[in-house]
Length: 318
Image (cartoon, rainbow, N blue to C red; front, top):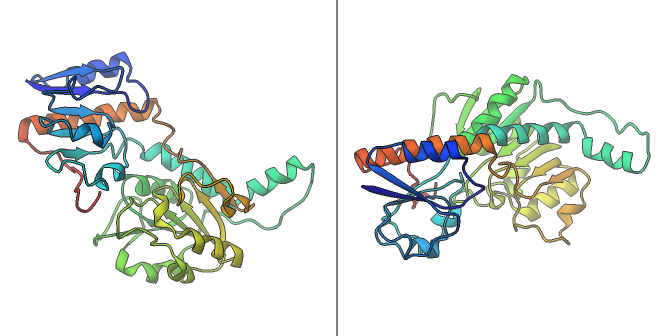
């Protein structure tokens, strides 16, 4: 019998969700823990649903599959102690909609200068701050075309934006995008962008992909939003671009470093909105429903075939 342990991660599953996990496959037994189990408690388990520390995983010689409750995997793929024989699966698909809503909200907040108007309100100032931009008929370049980037792009399209997706490998067409380019073509598409939306994982290829050189390719006043990993942006280059007006506004749910130190100058810009890595909504009820669906699908596939569709490539780090 295939043994699966569910450990606490991002809030508890409901009784109905637990029942669906328990009955997903006839050759699976599911055990729920209300605490982080010890290696002895997890001896003999084939699978874990949750986000345990790597220090625990490496003590479990019987473990075959780790099903994360998060979309991000960098804690695991960047740790040399992660046991390569344990298949790693994430919860990509669970967070796209909620993060897309947050990103659209952040985009409109910046376009309409709502932060500056909030500041004026706090000071009792009735003051028009000048012309604002619109999302309709603008061009948004999305660095990252996975669940997060595509979910945002579909909503931006509905509001009238022209969307360009940038990804590692070529694609003729992707839902949500009017145009698709490769990372090799990045500097060719950047001049078209009224806004850049980054939803990239943390990999050697994506670190500081937005830097002084790539920012110099953009039109003056470009809007920058990062909902992926903070390491995708050279923070000092971003600050310099904000100072020069090359970047007109920025929305950052992730930063480098993270957390951002209290004394960092990024906090001081009135045209920058910083949130503390919260776009996923701390795994709300809808996301947990999707995590259950993803986990059941992946575990059933593994029991039947020994493989998991779309498992994480440890070497590529996504």
